[in-house]
Image (cartoon, rainbow, N blue to C red; front, side, top):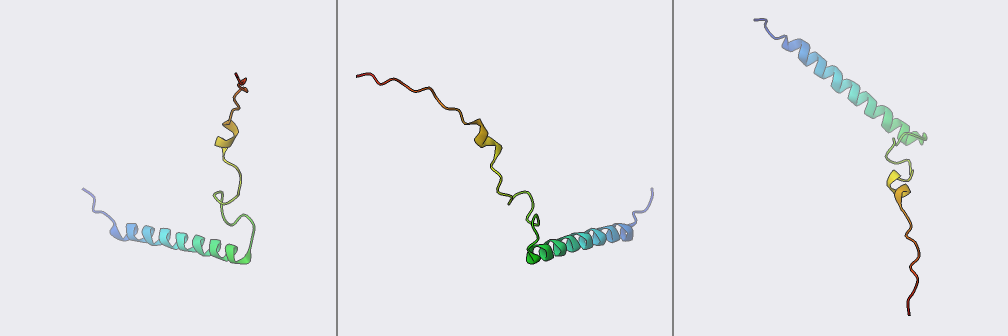
Length: 64
């Protein structure tokens, strides 16, 4: 059976952490500079699709 290469796995984890940290730093810098679109899709202010499914009911005649 082959021996696991722990140093390779550790290096891959370190590279993933470094990439994530750099991405976060870029997003923070973009947010501080006021660049549009830096907030992502959550904060775009677009209405949800659920609002389009509202149906109106026919008027009920009043009976006296």
